Amino acid sequence: MLYVLEAVIIIVICVAGCFFAFSNYKKNVETTIGNAEDKAREIVDEALKTAETKKREGLLEIKEESIKTKNELDKEIKERRAEAQRYERRVQQKEESIDKKADAIEKKEASLVAREEELAKQSAVVARLNEERIQELERISGLTSEQAKEHLLKIVEDEVKHETAVMIKEMESRAKEEADKKAKEYVVTAIQKCAADHVSETTISVVQLPNDEMKGRIIGREGRNIRTLETLTGVELIIDDTPEAVILSGFDPIRREVARIALEKLIVDGRIHPARIEEMVEKAQREVEIMIKEEGEAATLEVGVHGIHPELVKLLGKMKFRTSYGQNALKHSIEVAHLTGLLAAEMGFDVRMAKRAGLLHDIGKAVDHEMEGSHIQLGAELCRKYKESPIVINAVESHHGDVEAQSLIACLVQAADTISAARPGARRETLETYTTRLKQLEEITNNFKGVDKSFAIQAGREVRVMVVPEQISDADMLLLARDISKQIEAELEYPGQIKVNVIRESRVVEYAK
Image 1 (tube, rainbow, N blue to C red):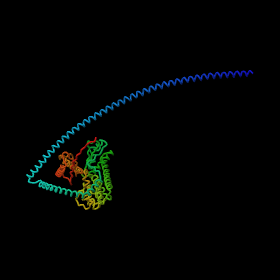
Image 2: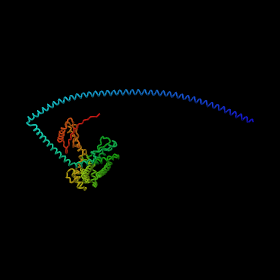
Image 3: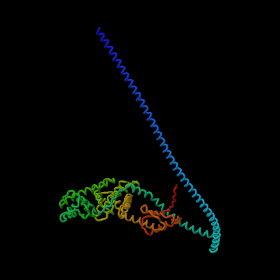
């Protein structure tokens, strides 16, 4: 029983403790909720205050922005008004200027009307005086106006007949030119298709040295090295103040090439003494012989001609070291071969035979400095010796007109040789003559009164004269062209004829604004 009572007491105590604990927890929760509600009210009040502040600040910014925008608009309106006022003043000034011009035009019109009336009166006086002059002329000459008119017509008729005769002669000349037109077209086509580059050869070669000390080694002790090299090659060595260079001088290009190769080998080797010089000269001679053969073979391959005797091929290679008036002989022969082939193709002849004849036409120049006789005679003998065809032999003999051409291919070789040699710039002598003639031609035309400038064109076959329109009229152009042609005939020597082209040009320039 005691245990039960203790248990009941313990249960009562536990229930009382739980009740007190629950009451304390409830009070704590209610206190926390009250604090949270107070905090929430404070936050809401603070947010309302902040929003009110932001609202006032936004209103102030908007007000300031509107004031600023209003000021800018006022400023722009003022600028637009000022610009409009400027435009208005300009328009007013232009209207005033137009009014002034209109007044001036009215005054000019009135003046013109007065002048027209005066001119009408003067025309009547002139007509009366002209009639009196005619009557007086009829009285003095004893001829009526009809008789005088018949006399003038007869004079004009005679002049027209003379001009007609001159015109007929010119037309005959033009007809002859038209007959030669095809031949000229063939020549021009051949020239246009064949463009060869030529280098004017000189009588010296320059060998570059690694340093100026090498000059002393080339000269050698008491000049023995340079004397040995000059004796073996036949070329003069010029050692002067030119930095790091030695000049080889000689009229024989082959010897000069041998000396150049030998000297370059000695410089590379570094051992320069008489025995070594002799060895290098022999090697250089062998190299030059190989080079000559290769150049000859290259020429035949370039032209497309095969079956030429090896000795003739070697002689072709020697022509690389032969020049005529500064024009390389081998390059000239190759060009003549191409031109002859092109002309033969245009006319339907044997192209291969034409190229062969063109390539060998100057073969005598390879030996004319070693043997007596002209290059034509020597070339024909060489072609006969090495069993060339009679067409080629005749082409060689006749390409300078010494022998009559027996085939059209020989005529083509002659024409191609003339084209290659006479082309401006191909040879020194031709170039000087050409430039001098053009210069004299322009000087003659520039000396005439009223000539602005002149140009010699078409290799001197035409001169274009630009005249000053204010000084030379259309009628004066005829007389000027005739005077220029007469003076050219009197002062210049030239083949064919020179066309004098007088040009009078007037230009008016205006700008649309």
